[in-house]
Image (cartoon, rainbow, N blue to C red; front, side):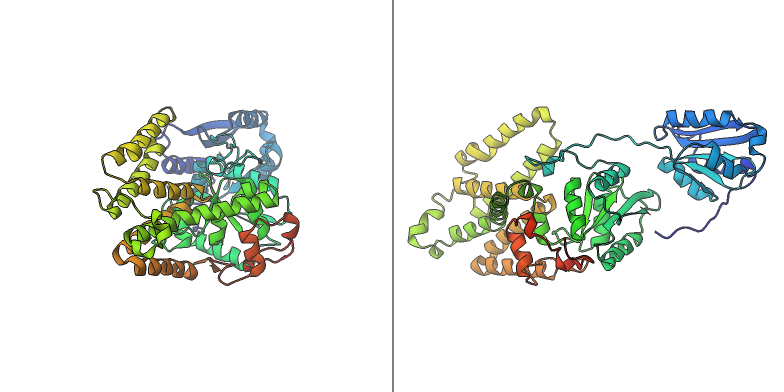
Length: 487
């Protein structure tokens, strides 16, 4: 965002600076905002910090060094001597804007005010509460690394740089949110990523005008991608550093947001949401097989249920030898209503599972199996065929690597069910065409969403359909216009 003009410069009189910061930070109103009035080398000083963010042992060490100073040590060039000699720490800077200083304190660094100086000293000796890097639940692999991103931005940038030691890896820092001042890092490899894509993403971030980012990455996505009523995701989320590194090497741009364990990968196509790290942790033939199984499962989750409903409602469309595909006992409840009930039931069960403590998860599973299974059939609420085909669709939904894509596919399935119920064969065909047109028209930061299928690129489409051996993947995706096209 645009940097604000200075409104409250640091004064030479420390009392005025302390008064302003006490008011701006709410010292005395918030128990965790700490003000320390100290005196070293016969100079009045004041420290402002947030309890819980400051490294106590480090600040104690700095205070010990300052306590040893004599008045003559700070007689001339006071600021220069403190910053470069007497404060033994790596991350030390100065600022002459009290507004910026207040924001810095709230972000974690400690601020030192010295009487007679028109600049404050900012000591970035902060630490955030953080959990250890663990394997993400939604992106597990049988073979591979077990570390994952956490909620602290510095940890996440370190996990990324550990895997990408390129000299041109860039981590550009930004702040978004008038009140939240959320830290954001735009990450890309300068020698690979197209400058125009990087510029578009940074411009989109700089134009965000809101007071805060309560949902962090999700709020950022909605601001930079638009198309709020389009269910298909324009960015890919990942909590795996190796997945983010692989995309950086292709020429993508990653957005790391403080407070979120998910990193945004931009730009992305439909096929990025269909790939999983597990495919690259196996031999190419095994990975290709797994990818084919995944594609079949995902597309079955979208089209199988509406297609079966069309054939069951219009048995004349079925050849006689395939008549078993239809429904044997339609039951008392209309077929479409059965689908509505079970679709809502599956989603309600999913939400219940999220909110259910782990110790009660088994009991919830037993209840769900009884309700949706045998009892529902016996009372005539559902038929066996409906449960069978919905179960196949649910398996395909859970097999989708991208959680956001799985939700979008669920909405597409419901849409196709409605159009098929209203207009039968015409509704089924036109519904599919409308979804295809939507996907064809979509773009992610100027990149066609269905590339390399539309527009067609044989080499890239082969790599999308099949898990090619890594030695053969010696070219980066041309749609990203990488500065260095060769791997």
